[in-house]
Image 1 (cartoon, helix red, strand yellow):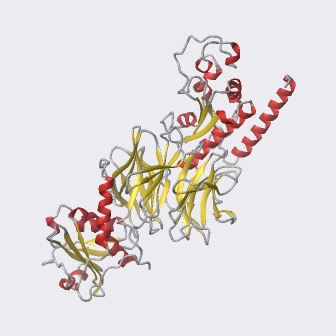
Image 2: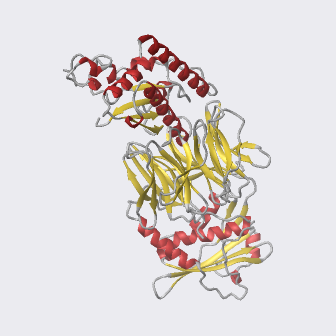
Image 3: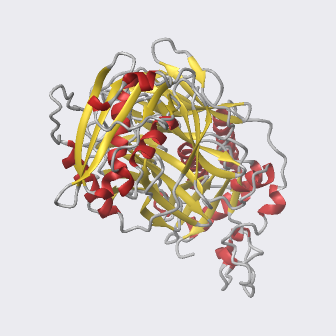
Length: 444
Length: 189
């Protein structure tokens, strides 16, 4: 199990603010920097399919949270419920409500069927900030799993709630939580296009780019500070880089012909792009400042949609070199090219899983486009969706959920499916087509 | 080049293009849809500039007729036709568009300062990025033909809009057929 967080396990009950507050403050700055754009109608997330086993957890409203406009534990609960892996146990009837680990009477919770219980408090500080304390307890083993304190501005309650949900998720499932990550996506309303960034639950969407020409293929830098995307505003596809910190935009690739399909290398120093400048769509490496363009391969047909492996040593890409679009893998540094998909005559848009053990892609099956997942070792393919018009997959940084573009009632929507195909969500925004989702990285 | 050798050159060219197209398109082609692209093609281009009547004498090769009007905008000139349509998943150029492509190539050959962009487009099905590449391939294919007909490389930039700028927003085969298309756009238009 990968431990990203370092919550204090409070054997001594002495809780000190950790490195989180700094990070949370940084995030706050970032949101302000982005806030130049008008906040848009946010995405509404609806769970449309459940998983198998769920973990029953009681989240007790934190003492003092009712004094603030953001219902902190409601956000935590909504995050966990949306993952499809948790069942929320109603804490009503337990009086008084415990706010500290030592106040928890385990029998109250096992009696309600809860395996875990979260309690906490929100306390104002003299400087206007608040201290959020949180404890996670295993009600069955009667032990404490986590205890954390954050000192934050009230405006950072949502972020703090996502952090708490991440800790609960990680402690109880063994996987990294992604509730405090962000997502980017494109909306189209009439002839107006926007690139937006929102919290992973769809809240606080901020407009990053406005355009009257199509935008596509947003992709996050590994450190989450920049987004590369394609715009047609110059009457041709041009790849841009947009800083989320400074708001500065730079041209990454604007060569003769079309420039598209940006993909970040894990080191964040360079990207793969598809350029047609030398006669056909081929994959090139380019430095993040636009210099050092270097062609990766020469093929007789189309090569595009590069996607780096998590270790940066290989790329998956789509090519029609075999007569139909299929997925291939190139080992960088002069290695071989290997065909990865064989079933069907249209397999495109490969995206590595973060553990490097397989990839998600889009396959056409009798005129229908669906997501599938392939394991590198066994070459087994599992079809994940049945939407028929599914495209542009983006894998959550913990590999557990895949966000993708779909359609519902003639409108573009986002949807998510768990990598085992069991949990399904639908994300819609009022009055716009939503498309081209890109899941942001874990914030270190 | 005399007429005979020009003809054999042209047939060789077409055999090559047809073979390349066949190789390129055969693997995934569904049965070609017999849609009314020909009718729609006439004047369908967004750049045909209807209402520029008054030009006279523009023939197939426009500039050689001594017309004072602009043959590119004369609806009676083949040069006012600006769209080449394709089958699904294919960048094979159909024979029907040979005269149009040849006429524009000859125009570029005669007007060496003329510049054009070939804009490739796709229907809405499938990956956005793969469609960018497919539209690019459609534009590149027509450009290669134009180069063989006498245009020069610096005169033609090929770009792709993929499925991002559909001319017809519908979701049926009629709309799709209209959107699988190369458009010829001259500099300054």
